[in-house]
Image (cartoon, rainbow, N blue to C red; front, side, top):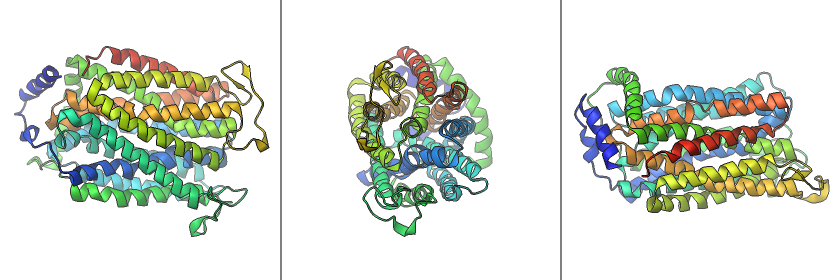
Length: 474
């Protein structure tokens, strides 16, 4: 690790002296750490409520003509967002490195996220352009929240020493999962009601007079996520110190930032550990994006899950995700990031095989089961129970996979260049992030079955495992 770190530093030193921020103290106060951790808490409702468990299934079941076309359309929107992220992330990361502070960029991205999230309220059933509003709002919000994460991640090397990267990264993912859990309980318990009964999961009439018939409880997830972000991102701005400002102006930084992307990619390619890791990250993160994007849609389409089933599934998944992220962060500091990532990839590939083996009336490809009956209760059929268990496994390993990915990169690169390399990490996670959702969308459309999704993702995961296996252990 030290040799790779020094080599990258020397290559950059040929062009300009190492900035002083590499020598800044890395023992931030507890309030400063808490402010940074709350960023994930602030962002998570968008992923939990909009991307996965409430708005996405609502889109597939109530806005799109049918579940298959809904999965395809959502896949195309996810792919488009990934393509935009592939272009923006490394450039903006390099610009942020040149100018210094990261929080102004987080604020700008947050503004876009808030506007896009509020727009989702207007994607009502039967309204003109509702599908377009939903897809554009989702895509813009995804771009904004992911780019904001680039700048937040780049603050890691300035908060704690390298031996604490794993625990810090894992704790932030756990904090995010908890935020998603709390927000999901609030929405399902008090806001989103079953259109048939008019009652929430807690048996209450929805607050704020939300109309179940027009699915206002599902659509409120957009504005709810926006307000949640505004409230809980404030500690980051108030308590967490930022990187000192550089004398370089914004215009000059933008010019250098665009030019620096090419040199960053060249630097990564010259140093095998960095380049191969980023390539592996590109592939396995692509699969993970698709898993989260289609998990709720798959449950709604294959098993007919409604808000209650999806909501409880989401709550259980976030609980296991929180536990997994905390354990994964400590394993990262103890045994290294690479073993944690490899183990997570293997488990996810096995989960995809398990999902592929399920149908409404069979499990494990050939074992017949009784079809779901109205009086079975929640998750009453065997295929639903197996799918539920597999989903919980996804939650338990997704956090460690993502947390250890960013801690691995933080150990590999100089602190003063963290922004551009985390931008490149986002690029590697997004440059082909349109491919897995696009492949799922195309395969679903061609074969006219939602089972095509997990079959595609297995190939992505195995390729990522092979690439990461060649990275020198850190």
